[in-house]
Amino acid sequence: MRFVEDKAREMGLSELIALSTQAFTYFELKGGFVESTLDDLPPVRREKYHQSGRNSRVLIKKLNVPAFGKLDALTL
Image 1 (cartoon, rainbow, N blue to C red):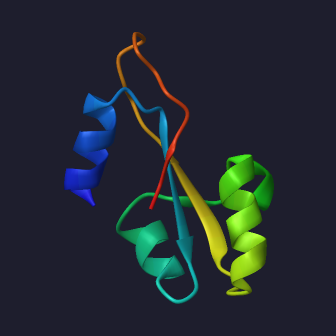
Image 2: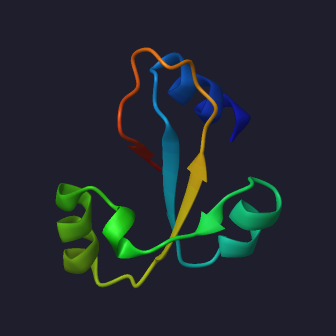
């Protein structure tokens, strides 16, 4: 996770979004993610979520990044 976080920061991303059906607790306890809602998913990803039928839980982690060059999010 740390590698992905560092890479996201290098890209100027302000948050990470993870979808999980089984590793929810791991993302919370070890990764610092918090539960979120489908509304936080980008529209294109939200549509894929509905099509998948997997009923994953949505988690989000805000990243501390420099103020310049911020992008929206990276979905894991």
